[in-house]
Structures are given as C-alpha cells and as structure tokens.
Length: 417
Image 1 (cartoon, one colour):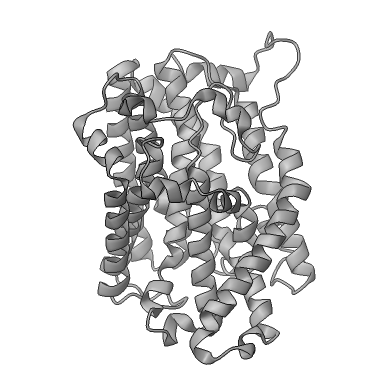
Image 2 (spheres, one colour):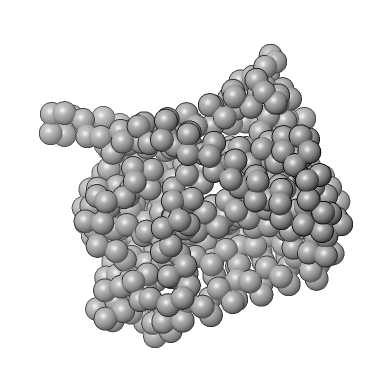
C-alpha cells in the first residue's frame, strides 16, 4: 500500500552513515542522499562554468550559469530533514531530543570540515582575507553579512552562514509553532499557515533589500528562509500523510508518477534559465522582477525534484532507481566536501593547463570531470578522516538516564506541549 511506502522503516536509520542518520526514533529518507549529490553536482557545474568561461561562450551557457539552483535544493533538504523530527515528536506526543543534542549534531556536521577546508585552501592556493585581522569573520561563518567579505574566503560559504543561522533559529521556531497549535490536524493547519506568513515576511525583506540596493542582503537567512520553509512544509505534509491509512489522492498520484515531478522540475529550471535574460556571471545587476522570478522558480524546481524522495520513496520507478544508485548515494554522503573544495579545485586545474590537453569543444566537460574526480577525492579524505569519526558522536546520550533537566531539555519539552 502506498501509505506504507511514504517513509523508510525506522530501523533503517541504524544502517545509515553517521553523517545522514536521523535522530533516534525517526524514519530515514534514504533517497535524500542522492539529492544532496545532485545539488553538489549542480554547484560544481556552475563553478566550472564560471572558471572556464562556458557560462558565456557555450551554447548551454544560460543553463550552466543558473545551476546555482543547487543551493535551494540544499536548503529545502535541510528544512525537511531537520524540522520533521520536531513536528513528528509533537503530533505523536513524544519527547524530542534535547537542544544540546541538536546543537551538537549541527555543529559537528558543518564546522570541522569547513574549518579544515578553509585553513587548507588558505595555505595553498590561498584565500583572500582568511589570514588577516578579519579571520574571525570567515571562521565564524559571517562573511555573507558584508559586501566587502561575501566573495572572500570560500566564496560559496555564504550559504553555510545561512545554514548556520537556520540551525540557530529552528528549535525556537519549532517551540513557537508548537505553542500555536494543540497537535493533530490543528498542528498541520497551524504550521502551514504560520509558515505561509513567514514566507510573506521573507518576501517583504526581499523588497527591502532591493530598495536598499545591497545585493549581499539577498544572501542572508531573512531573504532565503522561504526555501527552508518549503522543506518544512514538506515535512509537515509528510508526517500528516504517514499518519493516515490511505494517503490523499493527490499524494498517491504524485507518488506513483515520480518522473512527472522531475519533468516539472526540469521544465521550470529551463524556463527560468532561458527566458528571463538573467546575468551569466557574478554581476548583481538584476531587476527586481528577474531576481524574484528566479527565486520563485528555483524554489519550485527544487521542491519538484525532492517530491519523489518524500512521498512513496519505496514505490519504485526510474526516478527512484536513479536516486537509489549506490554511487550517487555515496557522492551524496561526501557531498559537503565536494561543495567546499570544488571551486578552488577547478581554478587550480584550469591554471595548471588541464583544459589545454583537449580540443576547445570539449574543454568544459573535461574540466568538469577532472574537478568532480579531484573534489570527490578531497571530500572522501575529509569525510573518512574527520567528518565521519566526529559524526558518530552527534546522537550520543548523556549518562544518568536523563534525570537532569537543563534549559535545552525544557526547550525540547516545550516543543511537544
């Protein structure tokens, strides 16, 4: 029955890599591993396009330049996987893990690997700003809050600052949403309405950022929260569907036709990339209409891409078979390192003449393949040497059986009242 296919069995969590294992007692959505890989490949492809100039001189330049769509995919994945345990614990009347546990898992996930990459790449080939009196800005995930620093350090790390801000806000947002509802159907309706209101606030901030003329403001949490909110809304709907013996007709229709969802994602992306005359480089001269339509289109494409992994993930189909591919899932497991290293790997390979070894017509593909292989190797070293050993601690329980109740426990318990 399709309803039984909406989530993987809870015991599957024990088989997961520690970097992607859910909190104890929560189901594992294994197809998201490959979605992470797809997001990382999108980011890598657009970075290689910038490095090689293919975003301008290639017939597919308009598409390559807009593969920053990988960022909203990452944000929606975070919104879904991080909020679902909070919401499920509330509607099921059980206690969620403590704030300390949540904070520990998030810090272990994002900080050590980033600090390692930032330090290694600052030593060689060298990063602007890192070894200066402003070092704390880059090690503190704060580069995205100033036009002077947003493209220094690891330029792509502005999105990590947004992720970290979301991690800080999410437990408090979960508590606030919990206090607005009483559980059950009321919780679903209340959360969706509240998330809708927050999305409107996000759009108001984007209007302010445009009027202020500060492009870096579009790379902060207030301007990108709606992408996280889409993932959170999917989490709410996922819990609601899992609680029903028979999913609604619309869910059954989409779950049984995952390819239709992906076709919608591709069509949406192509229309956004080709019809809006968007900048192909790092220019910031967007009209408000261009920036808004790109933002909404990217969010829609990312949601459509994620739907087969949320609903009916065991229902089969070519799309899910692709997402279940072990190689792609492995790349998703180490995708954080791919994200961290790929831009400077592409720069290094380009600077050392890799593209000169092949004819001009295949240079982009050659550089992309080389970047993927080297970045994946760097990511594997980072993951197996640093990330995985540390991530085994992320769901560690304190001794003593939970008799102590600190502030973080009070916050967690408030989220289920």
